[in-house]
Length: 185
Image (cartoon, rainbow, N blue to C red; front, side, top):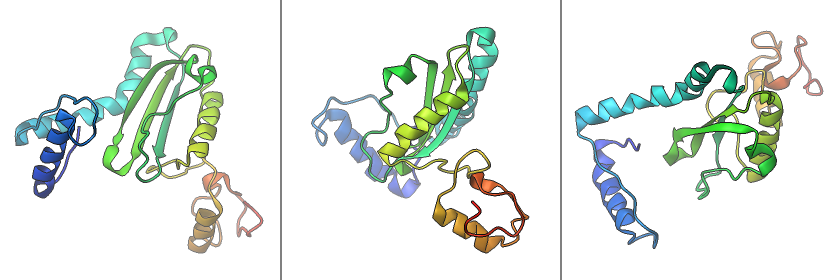
């Protein structure tokens, strides 16, 4: 689903028509349609269904579905390869893949329902290594929290904002000590 401003709608429609016929890409076309205002509002609500699909799948499947890995990533600008190509050692551990995102800015949400007994933490760490090798950034839009390791430039920013390290100690897997120093990350 592409949602664009009214001012861009004509240009996007023209581009999609060219792609649909294969004129601009040299590839086979694809199916698409433009929504009227009411259809667009209703279709846009599907983002909530997509965002909860992995959790719902796990709830419905019960013990036949495993843990969930939910990734929020930003691909490199103008990266033509939107989908990952998982090695067999990871792919065989995944029961269901769910993709959605903000395609025109290359922010992707990739949710995976794992096979029962697989460790979400272990699979996620392997996937993050693959993403880093591709030049992707994570998390893309939901901040680091205490799950992801922050880079030097963002830790410097946090130190400038909060020199006493009392507002959110430990963010980006940094130190939880008060009055952090550059070497304490």
